[in-house]
Image (tube, rainbow, N blue to C red):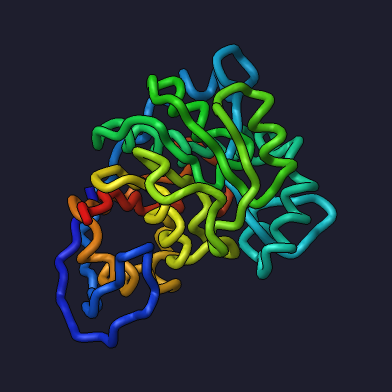
Length: 275
């Protein structure tokens, strides 16, 4: 568990709102004491992710400048939503095999397990559902129904074919999602809040669609968390959330190859406060 010591400093109020909710005036400076969770037992999710019955594999979205063959570096280099759509349209059919399996990617398993451990239950929206990796793991843990949304219709087509989602729909979390306020009892997101993808303002749409007392669990690339303003965002959210915890976890399995093999993510878990 990664714990934070919080020092408050005054900050001007933001005008951003979720319906009747408005951000408060506090800014947080977070001091981390790191304790890593162990790598999860991913056998169940992995079997399903490889096309076995129940709800075959999937993943979360990235976004970046195009290369001849999509990879993590091109995903981290994404700059616009159109970049993301182009990259993932090209990558959708091979994302699971070329990236998730070859690199020992386990972040979706971390998010699904944490959501269940926090007491989360359905209906759930998987934001940045990609090819359905997190949806498969949620279903394997008995969470349902689960809906999925992603900026890439091609990635969602792969996810839908796995049968792990009740419904899927395209959407840009930074522009708001096509779901009514309070539609879902829980919201998860794995791999979407990272370099070249989505910053802290993407949390607004998640807050809108979750019910009061519902759990939100999202992963944030640890380096992205420090650079993209998540500290200030958490401070602004303080009056409208409860039970906040922050847990640092590995993104890849212990035997993962490559220069990003030791990268970590922070799992932010909190409830939407009662109005």
